[in-house]
Image (cartoon, rainbow, N blue to C red; front, side, top):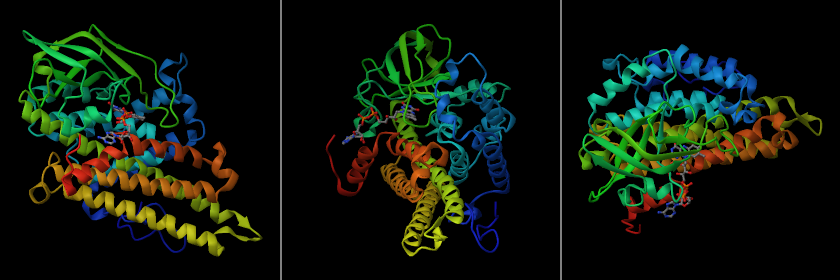
Length: 429
Ligand SMILES: Cc1cc2nc3c(=O)[nH]c(=O)nc-3n(C[C@H](O)[C@H](O)[C@H](O)COP(=O)(O)OP(=O)(O)OC[C@H]3O[C@@H](n4cnc5c(N)ncnc54)[C@H](O)[C@@H]3O)c2cc1C
């Protein structure tokens, strides 16, 4: 990895030669990026063509490479600890820019692996913002610092809606999973589906509405695996992001201590959920960024060795036009993603992640990077001909994964609605 992004010597460039702001990344994070890159090259890319076959890995009797992946990644490499701030014993404290570079590195290997590996910090952010919940952070920290994988999944989407449940304008009015306070316990009833890493999660952050509460009516309640009344189904088979498990979770009179709510104050809870949407959308823009980098590597090698009409493919005028557009789109995506991430790291100037302008900015970034990614990867599929659409070429998998990055965290149209709300004062639902 080049330190300053100025190239890797004469001739062909590499994935570090686009527009990543290396000056905003600490030496420690650069080292971690290098470790993740090595990990991806050694442990993930050798399985690139078969990884889709493992969508049901938790249900298999035999041990697969996916079972071993999480321990190596979360414990041996220390990613799990990285999620916790240093004052709680973790090695974290990364800026938004740094966090996204790590997400991008892992997404270059596999979007599903990156989703599962980075789902836990999403819940930690819910506990940390707008004010840290010291009690719960201290309660869960020992598990995150331990020698076992400890994944926290985020149960938001429901059978009737994902977008409307997390539409911050609706302030919880569309949430059907209910929590009621009985003495010192929350009693939860409802049905969630789709949470990333739901099958291996040890803890569930459940977005509920509180019975009898006025708007805003959102409560993020943490439910440990094994709590009576909590049940999960089998993983769904999806078009991509296969090894990230998604499926149903049922809550039937599930009881947890009152202290397991992220923020008691309804207003603070609302800000926490809004900040979480902003963070989720920015993170979901780093996924297609990593996918684009992988597409670039595969395509670069392909056009360097393939000939058309007896001439190197990359020297044909019409092909050059396509390659130039691909390079331009990757540059535009990288500049935009990290520019907005850097703004998030400067709340004293640009505001906090729960402010509407930042929800709008994160929404715009997810849509734009996703659209640029789609353009890059679908052009690459076309340029590679039969190798583009066949599994052996490794490009079609990237296209399937990329489509999913465009939909998660509310859907692309809801994100345009956020922009219209902020910039035009739209007041529709
Ligand atoms: C790999 C993967 C990981 C996932 N991880 C999680 C997770 O960790 N936790 C979780 O809870 N869910 C998760 N999901 C679910 C995902 O977040 C939802 O699919 C997504 O939010 C869209 O919700 P929906 O499917 O219910 O579609 P809907 O909400 O029904 O949306 C359908 C369409 O309507 C549009 N729309 C939404 N609101 C409006 C509006 N107000 N006006 C106009 N159009 C609108 C959307 O943009 C979309 O195009 C995951 C899904 C996948 C595939």
